[in-house]
Each structure stands twice: as structure tokens, then as C-alpha cells.
Image (cartoon, rainbow, N blue to C red; front, top):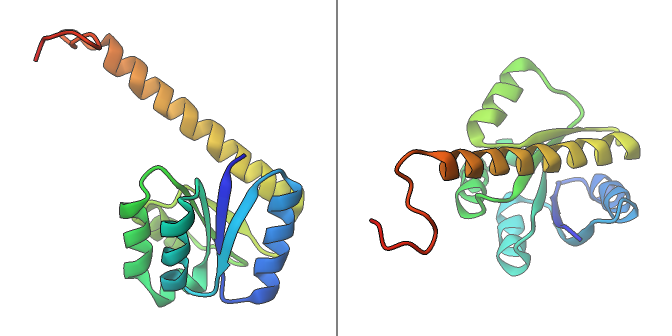
Length: 145
């Protein structure tokens, strides 16, 4: 079961997303109202999924960048009711993996997360296969260096 942390200044949005994730089979390890408070939960729970509201990211971009740096394997989703091209481009530059649209539609939220998980696994497998197939690559356990 994948662990998630939700960071959103709106208690109602946190509660709704919490319900969607729990019903979808995810373990919601914690909720926070700011990125700074969220970072504490990340240290404590080491989640695989982080859902962060756009307003929290905009309020503390440094904390968001620290999340990406400190949890490079975590999938980070921006949660917002509106997305424009500039926001999406900025999100990609910050290392976000996906976007969850408010108001929440349970099926869409779960599908977005599932597709991102699958795409991430495929990308990692392809990178590993390319590394394994690289000419001159040392076999695991060999003494070549």
C-alpha cells in the first residue's frame, strides 16, 4: 500500500482528498496546512505520494523545492482548481509528477495517480534496461571499474 501525505491550507479539501485516497486503497499517513508542516510529516512517514495545494506551493516555493530534493523518488502532485500553461510549466520545472483537479472526482483522482505510478515504473524500468544494455557496462557483482 502506497503512503501519501496531503498538504493543503483548506481543511475541507484535505478531508475530501483524504477520503478519496483511503477509499482508493492508499494509506494517508498525514495531513498538513503548509509546506513547512508537511516537510515534518515527510520526514516522519517517508511517503511515496505527496499531494500539495497550489496555494501552499506558491506561498513557500523553497519548501516545495526542498521536498523534491529530499524525496526524489516520491511522486508529487499539485492540487488546484485552475491550471494554466504557465502553472503547468512551472510545476514541471519544480519536478512535479502530476496534477489533481479540484473539485475532486474520485475516479479521476485515482486514475491520475495510478497512471503516474505506472508511467514512473515504466520509465525506471526502461532506464535500467538501457543501463544494463550499455556497451562496456560492468555486470553486477563484477570486479570491473
